[in-house]
Image 1 (cartoon, rainbow, N blue to C red):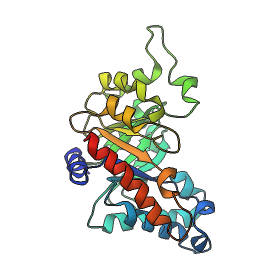
Image 2: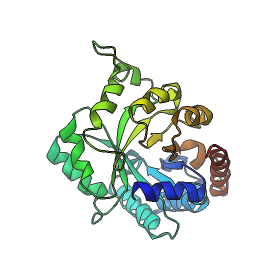
Image 3: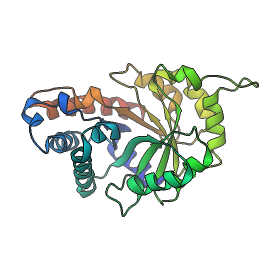
Image 4: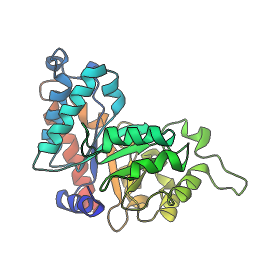
Length: 273
């Protein structure tokens, strides 16, 4: 999906909501737990319930890989289903990969190639190993690198906020340097909602880039603060909610509960747009 297609989708749905498909079999409703296709059926129900309110879906690969080959099979079923829908959505492989160049090439082929099993629009990438670990993900037209910049976990303080001799925090150095690796049409950045007050510093460095913002909802991030500091002329935000939506209910009506939470966020987002 190109930048303009994503912007058009945001305007059409009046939303910049990303639903995180962090599907844990232990947390699924009881009637799906013993179903051999339970993960896929859970995802399908969530997608059907939220597609009018969301513009993006973000499966976290760890939840599928933990289930072995069967988990990956159901991830493929989920992606095939998303690709089959007349209502399109931006798809993100939350994989946080990052390795030497030839390994990155294989990761990119596995998850981003239009000829591959998954054909995601974007993939989260760790920048620690530098340019040759990131640029292999930029070779596919209409595909995106989403670079980890300033995350919402407590451990972010261990490295991301440490400053160099000039007083520049590491996350800002990552933002500056990465502009040599991609552009606003193929590179986004992860900035946690719990660091919303720092979004103004992020925007000073990457004013036009899209930002993937996790942490709204169960992690306590404020949508109001994210929008105050992060919105740009093209919206420039994809705000993710995972647990707050997909586990809003755990009974037979779990999808209806998810729809209600997604609708609530979409209505708030519409006001900001």
